[in-house]
Image 1: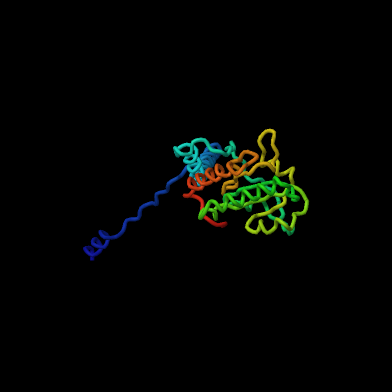
Image 2: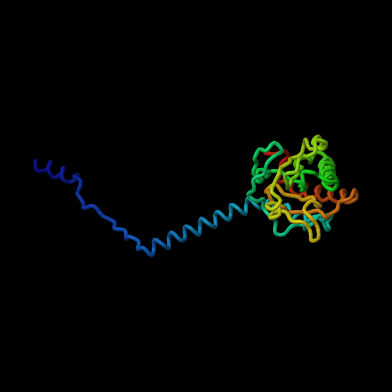
Length: 236
């Protein structure tokens, strides 16, 4: 019996006290420092995401204005810094509201004038249409936009020519905070280029002649080629 007890005790488990690990509670100062570090890391991550998103746009402009040897000096005037589309509410010819920022997603060739559309306006609308058609298969990446800066009615005679154009009424005083004419000129004299990100980035000199139209189309061709990696045909 004694041998049996010895053998049983030999294999019996030995109880040991539990080991407890005590972690120090951080002080308020340490908590603030930790939160600050996490905030900084979060901001850097957000900045990195923004840079990744903007990289194709920056690269296309760099290619257009710096890398391409045939680019030389563009006919259009580059707007620096670029001006993002403002938060303005426009209305179509039927009076339906449309935020101006909804035009994002396409290259825009923009003209501005009164709804009465005098001879200068008619010429710019004609040039818009011809320039877009002249882009061939790339024309689907460009929208024609006519911004009317008053309440004057549009003549029915010009409506057929606007079937493939976007026509919106915008308050002239508000529009002047976004687009700007060259010194000594008026908004209605120019054609403007807005990129798919919604940034006004180029203004063509005024007045435009048939010879100038060739130079404008060359600028548009080069700009579309340079942005081929980040812009798709058709409105999203």
